[in-house]
Amino acid sequence: MNSYLINSSSISLIDKKINELINENNYNEALINNYDLEEDSITSLLEDADTISFLTPTKVIIGKNLSNNNLNDDSLNYLNKYLDNPNENVLLIFTTNKLDTRKKAIKEFISKLTSINIDTNIKTKDIIKEIFKDYKVEYQVISLIESYYSDNLERLINECEKLKLAYIDDKNITYKEAINLLVKPLNRQDNLTFDLIRFIALKDKREALTTYQEMLNYDIEIYALLGLLESQYRLLYQVKILNKKGISNNDIASILEVHPFRIKKTLELIRYYSLKEIRKLIRNLADIDFKIKSGVYENNIIIDLLILNIK
Image 1: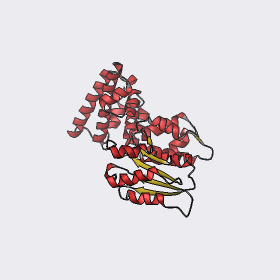
Image 2: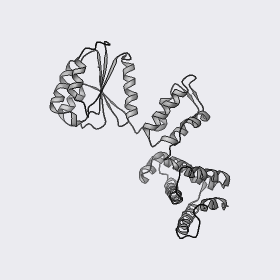
Image 3: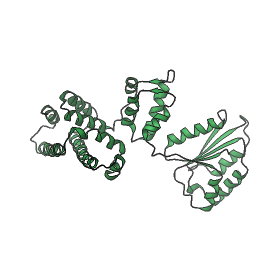
Image 4: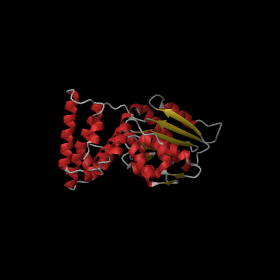
């Protein structure tokens, strides 16, 4: 069967699957025509499918954004007729992420396609490993990519593909090369907050000050920084309590409504702090915030003083 329906919310994963289908079905030399079904009609797509190509003997026709909005009775009638007698020289691919299949006519239409459901809840680490399956990659590279882009699947896939392209000759990627090539997302201050908290816990004043200065490069206001620190310490407190109760990482993420990767990173910190120490730090941060707003402390030096007074 040369007709497919790909169901996924990830554009990058859909595009990757389309390329795989083209390769698997030996349509690499075929003419490729794309239709956005939110703008283009299904009738136009089917007319193209029934038309002989004068440039190549085969064609790939892709109908993107298939939905109930563009599957009216007439469209379904045309689709079912075509699929009963498809053009054997055409690879037909539909993509969707919002198709209600309860309608009988839609069920009939889908039954004539090979359906492919792409799970976007798959672990980011597994996605990264799959992308680099033909490459030799240092294990730190996978953790680095995860820490940078775990909350943005499209960006994660795109950055992995860029990295693959950069080292396509020897297919060997080291951590040193990756960290120099990958761009740390500007909206990922969480990573630096984790690092700052860890260095404070380790009483490593030099690294804590270095991390703090790096955070300032993101133009973070002092109030926002205090908020980030307090938020992370509160999360640390909750995670430590739930972890002591034997609750799994995924269940902790579900209970606290926090991304699993952030829970994973937070769990790395719990051994450095007792619950009493975390409560004290939260109170100290609240006190600092109050004194800054009251004019007691100068906000441009308070974090430096906080770090230098670590004992």
